[in-house]
Amino acid sequence: MMWKEKYKIGVAKIDEQHEELFRRVSDFIRSVQAKGQWEEKLGKVKETLNFMKDYVVTHFRDEEIYQQKIGFPGYKKHKEIHDNFKAEVGDYAQKFQQEGYSEELVQEFGGKLMAWLIYHVAGIDQKIGAYAAGKEIEGQ
Amino acid sequence: MKAEYINAFYVATRDVFSCMLDIDTQRGELGLVEDMITGREANVIIGMTGDLTGSVLYSFPDKMALDMVKIMSGMEMDKLDSFVTSALGELANIISGNAVTNLEKHRISCQIVPPQIIIGQNKSISMAAEKALLLPLKTEIGEFEINISIKETK
Image (cartoon, each protein chain N blue to C red):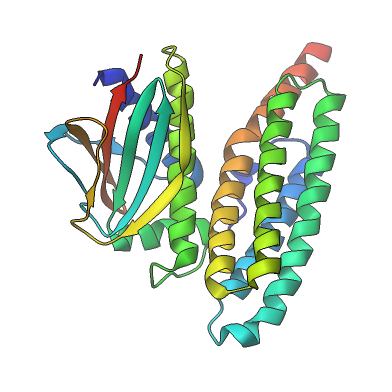
């Protein structure tokens, strides 16, 4: 996954976290799509999956705190989007526990996660940046 | 079927393609079809409920689907595996979600059902309405179609 300048929302901490999130999701996807036997790749897949998963929770929390701090009017709806996604990730985690980490299921999770994250950062999160920029101008 | 329904999907597709893939989308001539059939290899069906019910079929040539996921992932893709189809399903889900938001501006309230993937051409999909509208779309990485079969419930 390529990080692009246009993804930046102009809030340093969030932009850094987004870039880190892209790196971690990319590492996870690369481990899933690497050539070779699934059983041999699985160790790396689980490692990158956990490394990425923890960061999603941290980032969502920090971003929600920031939204509240600036009085972002879309906070409630945005938190709902985060919560829904966390629930979906939770569903996959449960399936991995119950059915095992099959290549097909992990690939399915990876594909969805990638597309979701790109749109969330490139599209939805831009509203936070636009609002924060407007507030700055207002405060001058 | 009203023009605003089609436009809601076209605008959503154009916006999402531009945002996620940096690709421009141009619409071709709208057609009326009797059946809903997968015209291309990689297909995503999204069900709709609420003021409008039915289904929307996104149909991509396999090469285009692989290119789309290549753009998103930055990695070469050579087959329509679960990673590729799931990313495609989510993209269609995002487009449909945006289309629903666009429809809300016309006071039409709908919900969408999670995506379903169908691989292969010439597969028939059951329709809610008698006819479906076929919207061809052109991009620099290929041509694809959106097949819309919805009816009003109110």
